[in-house]
Each structure stands twice: as C-alpha cells, then as structure tokens.
Image (cartoon, rainbow, N blue to C red; front, side, top):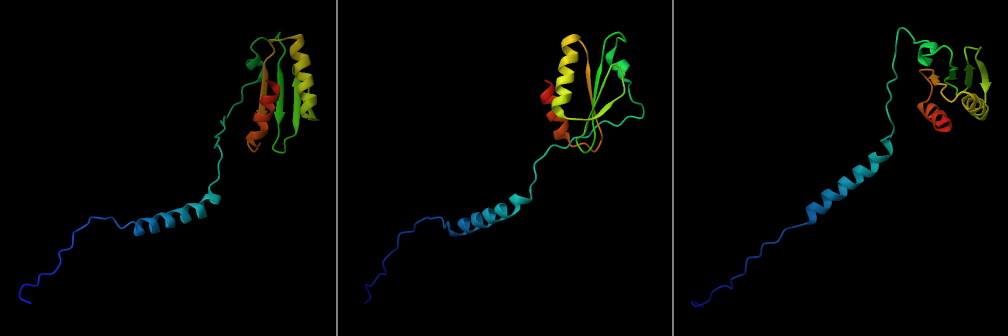
Length: 132
C-alpha cells in the first residue's frame, strides 16, 4: 500500500443559489403584504388667500358677462351669471345647459369655478371636464 495515492477531485466553482431564492421569496412576500396599504392619489394644496379677487376683476370688462360656478363639500352646485344672486341646488346638467346658453350669446364670457376647501378635487375636475 505504499504506492496508494488518493484520487484527486477536480475543483468546481459553482454558486449555491438556494440562499438567493430564499431571499427573493421573502422579498416577494413582503411586497405582496405591503401592496394593499399603498394608496395612490394626488396631493393638492389649494391656495389660501386673505383677500379674494372679485369676479368683476376676473372678468376684466364690466360690460361683458361673467359666470361663477360654486361647488360645496357635498358636491352641490351653485350658479351666478352677471352678478345675479347665486342659484343653488342645480344639477350638473342644468349648470352645463345654462353656461352653454350664456356662452352662445357672449362667447367671451369668462367662467370662474370656485370650490370649498373641503370639496373633493374629483368633483372639480368632473365639472371642468363637462364644461370643456
């Protein structure tokens, strides 16, 4: 047995991927568990002023007509044309019809949309979409 030599093993360089798979599965579980808690939305910081600009100044010319649409926090609409008293409790379609009728007479009439600070921004966007 003096001439016995053990077999030489060839060294192989392999990466053990089992720990990487374990880490990836843990990350997948974490992302799946936290995904429902992520809310998507747009933060809107509405302007706060101490003095409001009168609608007549927004209109520029006192001879031209101007239209003011108001939205409260509950989505109720109000409409005022040419400094008349605000009509409240109108539906969206009523407001659209009145604005289009007024703008067909005087196409240069500016339209001002005012919303309460607590008004959902989606209501304002819906109104602007319908007006355009």
